[in-house]
Image (cartoon, rainbow, N blue to C red; front, side, top):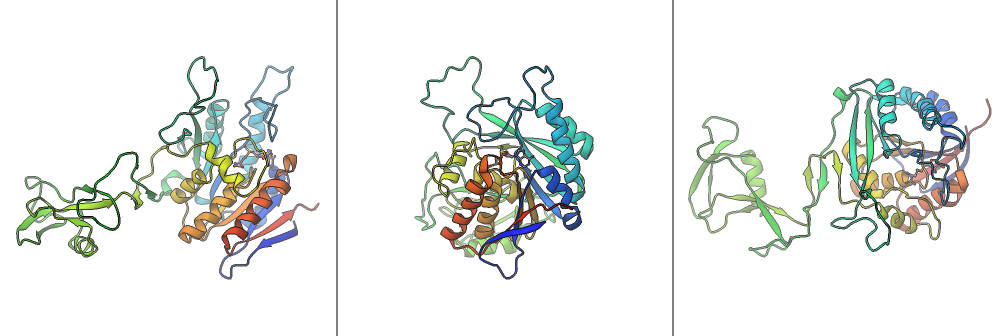
Length: 376
Ligand SMILES: C[S@@+](CC[C@H](N)C(=O)[O-])C[C@H]1O[C@@H](n2cnc3c(N)ncnc32)[C@H](O)[C@@H]1O
C-alpha cells in the first residue's frame, strides 16, 4: 500500500481515517495484515443488480444480454468479497447491507452460508419522506403498487455476542403538544412513572413513598429508583399537576429520548441523500446516494466509542460523512475505512472533495489518508 495523499486536520488522540483506492476484492485481501479481527461495524451498499444501465453512475448489471442466468455472477462477486471480509471482523461485529428485491433472497442465503444460519436479520428502510409519498406530483404511472421501501440485511459474526445501543429518538412533531406550566424547554407530553396501587407490591423493587408538594404521600412501586426520581424532580421533570394526581414524567417534544431501535427505519427520505451530497459537492450527479441520517442511525445503534467502521462500496462517501458527523455531535471517536474503485471518477470528483469540504466548513479535527495498492 502506498500513501498518496493526506487531508484534514490532525487529531492528537485519534488515528487517521483511511481511503483505499482499488477494486475492493483486492483491497480486502490486502487489509488482512493490519485489520484482522479489528472491524466491528460494516456498512455496504453494493450494486443491486437491477440491470439498469442508463443514467447510472456505476455498473449495475451482472449478466449479459444473451444469458438467461441473472444472478450467478452477482453472487460470485459478493461471495468473494464477503469471504474476504469475514476474517477482518471482531467476534461481535455486525455487517449491514443495503439491497432491494432483485437480490434479497440470494443475499440472505449467501450470508447464512458464510455467517451461519442463525446470524442474519432483515431491516426495512421505509424511504418515503415523513408524512409524504414518494414521487408526489410526478406523472408516473404505477401499475401495481409504488415501491416505497428497500432492505438492509444484517449479518452478525455471532448474534449472541451483539448488543445494540438505544438510539436517540425525537417525539414526532406532526401533532401539537401542550406546555401547561410554560416550561422554557418547550412543549411536553407526560408519561406514567409507577404501577397502579393494586399492582404495587410492598417489598418489591422501587417500592417507596413520595411526598407531593402539597404534603400528600403516595406509596407505589415506581419505574425508577428514588434517587432517579429526586434527580428528575430537581430538574423540573416531574409533573405534579394540581396536587391531586399521581406524579408523571415530563417528556419534552424537542428533546431526543433513548429508544429501543426497531427493524423498520422510518422518517428518513431517500431524497435526503442527494441533498446531503449537494450540500458539499455542487452539480455532481450520482444515482441515489444514501442519506447521511440513515447511516448515522445504524452507527448509533451498533457502534461503541473507538470502533473501526468499514464501507467497501464507498460511492460518494456517505459513510465517511456520517462518521465525521457522529464524531462531532456525540464524540463517537470512530475510525473509518472506505474503499472505492473510482468508477466514473467518483472517488476523485465526488468522495474526496465531499469529505474535504465537510472538514473545512465544519472545522472538525479529522484526518484522512489515501492509499493506493502497489504490486507485491
Ligand atoms: C450503490 S453505490 C454506493 C453508494 C454509497 N452508499 C453512497 O451513499 O454514496 C456502489 C458503489 O460501489 C462501487 N463499486 C462497484 N464495484 C466495486 C468494486 N469492485 N470495488 C470497489 N467499488 C465498487 C460503484 O462504483 C459505486 O460507486
